[in-house]
Length: 102
Image 1: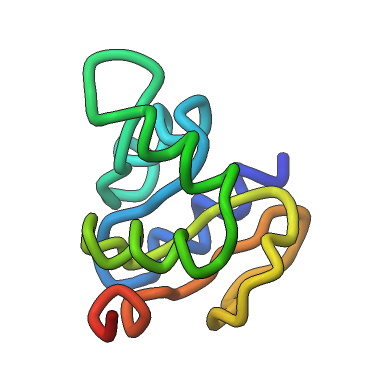
Image 2 (image 1 turned 30 degrees about the horizontal axis):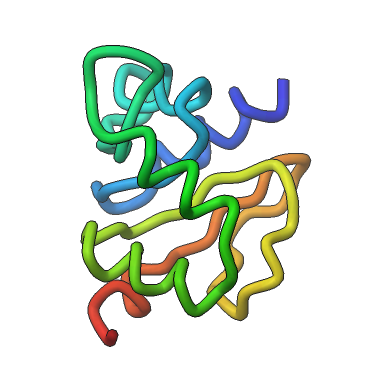
């Protein structure tokens, strides 16, 4: 499974906050030790995640900064010029520099 492989890759990364869809985020912490922004139930603000994936790169970078996000995990290209560190069915971007610059 593409998500399982991406989670195994993330286990080797420095700990951080991750934005991904709530469905994916539910398994994120138990499998990787990384904190999601929101899960399907019980944790976080799903509206931030919905806004992030529905808007443009400039607005996404504001969300990254406001939420101190280190990684973006998503199945599709987002069209933003971030540091793509994994691209095997699922994409992972290291956005720690973006979230600390804005």
